Length: 255
Image (cartoon, rainbow, N blue to C red; front, side):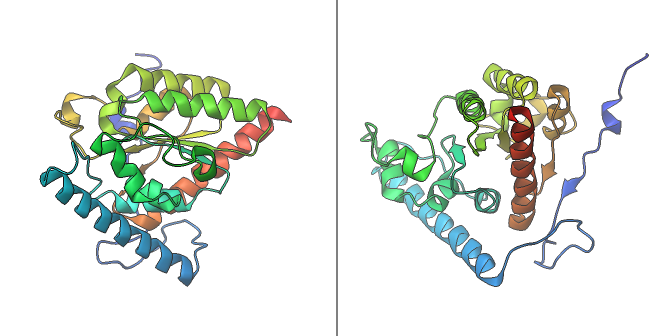
């Protein structure tokens, strides 16, 4: 059939900079601009995120929190991606973005008020930390991120937004509306999906027939990348390139 593209031909390679044993992948193709102090800070932030996450899970099991959504195993993806952002950039989180919150300097105790049911807003200054409130509704934050990014472009502000969500959110209409709007209007936004393969209760195989979630980007007119979320350096370099591209795209459209 003319114009038909076989999904099996779409590139689905996973970006890796580190091997499982911690050594660098040969010829990974990315510039590593991190100094030793950066690597130490990234490691410290990952360890801090893991420790806070473990303690928060303990508190939930002790009845001190009404609910808690752990970010276990997502420290590398979150800290690596967050480390690639500029101070003026904004993050629009879901309810698992503890690493982003810690990276942005938010007191973890303020986040836990949400899960204890005592957060009535205003526990931290959103503008100071450049991170929006946790979003419990699935995928709505993607629309918020795209809208904020569009406003920033209109104002000619040097801002890129990042929308964080899981694989389950890609089954929601809000996600597709956000992608379509971002692609059409060239909004300076990065859509950051952390795929743990199972959403809340449904495996990925029951959510999409696409070979990967990353290839969905092609249908909206912007590139997608599949990254090893356990590789903090891969998460960093791919987010760095995505943020740079979003910033360049917005700049070209407003000058």
